[in-house]
Structures are given as structure tokens and as C-alpha cells.
Image (cartoon, rainbow, N blue to C red; front, side):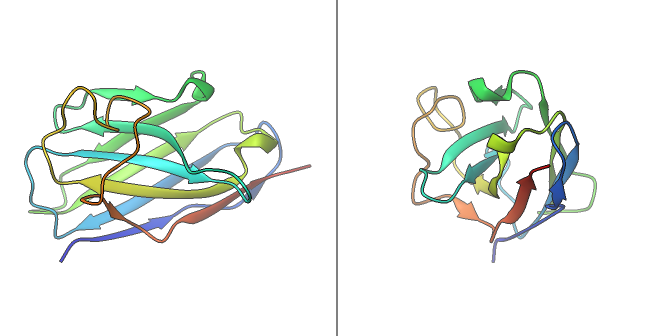
Length: 134
């Protein structure tokens, strides 16, 4: 059973930093894509960043060099920790952040590389809240 659990969300002032973590278990798929999405109240869910099984990384335009996605696969079979380091946070970054894992080998048009939406095959965590305000 695939499980994802996010942590690290908090309230910070503008210009602050946070590191989000997502513990993934039961995920033995060699070809895959993992990533972060966010959703603010009253807004559509939007893609933040993604990393495929070859460690190819893509970011949404609004990231503008402030966020870094990474992963750690050293915890054992089917276990991965996905990270999102966020620097210079701004009020518009306030949202609930969700990690996702897609067990399929991604193609060029997939959410892994584009703004196309994820599919029903994606697994999701419950999210972690990030609030940026002064």
C-alpha cells in the first residue's frame, strides 16, 4: 500500500524559509515521477515542482529560483523522502502543499514535465499548510 505523509509546514514571515518533507512508503516503482503541488483557498491546485526517476527536475515559472526539489532513496526498498526547500517565501506562497507520486514512466506531455494535470494514477498525501504573513 502506497502511503505519503507530508510535514514541515509552518507560519513564517515574508522572506523566510521552510523545508517540506514527504515520506513515501510502499512505492517500489523504478520509473516514476514525484512532485509537489499546492492549493490556496479559492484557487485551483497548481504544480510547483517535479522530479523523475532520472532526477530530471522541472519547476513552475513562479518558483523563480526560490525553491529546490530533491529526494532521498537511501531508506530502503520502496521508501523515498521527497523534499521541497523553499526560500524567500512571499504571501502569495500561502497554500496547502501536497506531495504526489506517479508510478508510471512519464512521457513528455505528462504533469512531470508540463502544466498538464496529474492523472488518477497519482498517489497523494494529506498536505501540509504553509502560511506566509507579516
